[in-house]
Amino acid sequence: MMTDVVEQSGETAGTADGNPVARFGTEEPVAAARIAEIRERIDEIDRTLIQLWQERAELSQEVGATRMASGGTRLVLAREREILERFRQALGADGTQLALLLLRAGRGPL
Amino acid sequence: MMTDVVEQSGETAGTADGNPVARFGTEEPVAAARIAEIRERIDEIDRTLIQLWQERAELSQEVGATRMASGGTRLVLAREREILERFRQALGADGTQLALLLLRAGRGPL
Image 1 (spheres, one colour):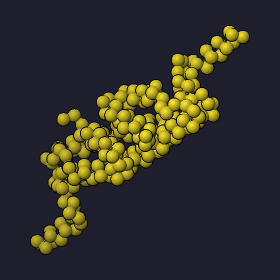
Image 2 (cartoon, one colour; image 1 turned 180 degrees about the vertical axis):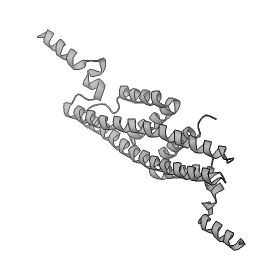
Image 3 (cartoon, chains in turn blue, purple; image 1 turned 30 degrees about the vertical axis):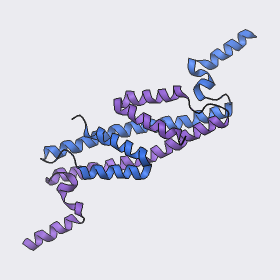
Image 4 (cartoon, helix red, strand yellow; image 1 turned 45 degrees about the vertical axis):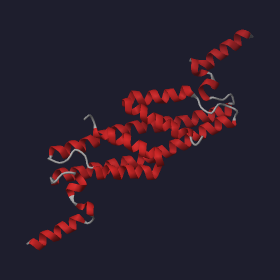
């Protein structure tokens, strides 16, 4: 009997993180299942965020390069202010922080 | 002739920002047109980023609420470390900053 229990917990565990309390922070199976489900959508969102981040940085760097190649300025501060304001209005203080990161990534290596 | 020029530039201007140098940082029309085109895609990306940010924060707060309602912990630090690592690997130092903002937004009001 003891062997069965050990085998079962070995199966469930798989990895060290297989333990539901370690993975989901709860022992309650219905809650753990709901958390696993929501996490799948969060992981999907994170993959999209990463892709969009990379695409945006490339596009924004292309804007800067196009501008400078035509004898223009490196940055357009009015545009940066507009973007900051858009994120701040939608997401509050977090939006300002997010926009500052996005703008920095969009400027590319100096 | 002079009148035509003034009317045309009046039309182009529309608003105070209608001036292509102020708007696009270049006087060169082909570059300005390309920049306008890229900015449309950037604006679309930004709208999606904002939507995903809001959806993610709500889902993440739901995870925390589900866990606490089932007698579990408020946070699962191993999961947060995993997310930080995923963003860092994909986006470098900016990814770490972005993940820290996302995690904070996902914890919700304390």
